Image (cartoon, rainbow, N blue to C red; front, side, top):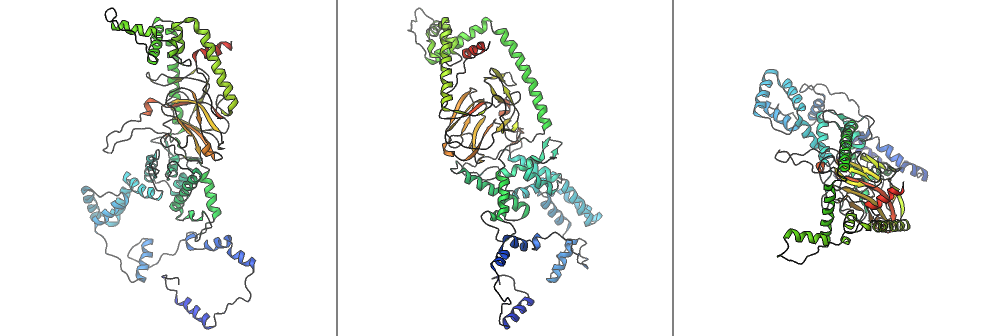
Length: 613
């Protein structure tokens, strides 16, 4: 009793025999009352009784058994006492090289070299086993391979993975940072309680741990394990997905740190341990209210220094370009280039084939004649090239063309005002409730330049009013997120621009995957052309779900972008986005049916500016 369990002690068996011989009488005179039953079976009573088990009792310092000359270690004394009761004898002492092999495999996972074998054997013979072992253990603990070996154990406890599993097995961004963090922590002998704090709230510690050599905020890297959960592919129920991956987070972290199956209390009080359903859902509330994110590991000082350096470059580029543009504005070279650009664009749209006359025309003359006959209307009226193409043919068309642009802009504004309502406006700064998850942003005025920091990428775009990612240039990571809101049944529209593959997305129920930028059910957009436009999203599939908006640059990952080594140890390919840049600009979010693009036109800007006096 129970079946296949250990036999009861002789004392307990004797008590049962005495009770049965006396008639197996129930000593209670009356059945328990309903109140007594309720009190005895309440969770408070059950948990109090379970809390008395030895596994939940505070650690004590028991008396060490005496008379065990076999070893002077307290743990060995308890083992030897148990062996004696079982009639067992300890094995003979191991030889020097056997001890060396065991120490190496346990502490570093690597075999000893021939030189290490010879040195240890000599120390064993000269200094004795105890001193030789103590010195070798210290040397192995000081080895960087110690952290590598024991980080593997820790990674198993916290189910380390570089992919999310499921169909597609999408990559966990920056997973290697968590692995390297564990190696550094174990080699630095960081206390266990500190590691647990960093795994649960590493980004909230009042005094975060910083690695002086690399400048990394180590405490933040401990949160990496929370991203290593399974995520489905195109989930049709994002709330179910939230419940599953949050439950997995609780299951893993409580098994790893407490040795308890706390997730068993998800649907009811735990059947064995003093863990209530209320306890489980208190933990669930903490984890589910924390969004999956990618945060920088760099120190604030390092980020500020980088921002300052980029700002200097931006100002230098801006000044140089303004001077160059002013010098070239009236030059014949610039006017010639504009005419050629306009003609080439018109020819590409609707080329006119002249009648061949090889007797009188050379090839160059025929091409020039074709360009001259290209109709001005071939370039769209909203194109920045249209004014030059139109004026080339008929300079007196300026006023007509300008009025046409103004009419179209007015129609678009009236349409959008009728079928949309503003949710968020970024033209005055970061809205209330929105927060920067990484990097910096700045408010830009209409006509301001988005700048790079290289000759090839000096000017990225002429921007409308709104928020621009990065304090200075397109080489800065930036991510921002809205507060939670209930997703509307109507559509949503985002007025934004970008290049270098930034993402703007609606995140339903904290589901972090964007499936390589394609999104799920039409709530994502990836920008690459640098042009500002309204991106209309059909979010009806997620109506009445909880969600938030997230806008981020391509490289908003771990915050560190060094090149990784190849498997053979050779230098890996550098991060391409670090050289090409990634940026976004956001003006407004609206609730809508379908928004029309506003006219981003040279002439319209000219008229608007003139109208302001």
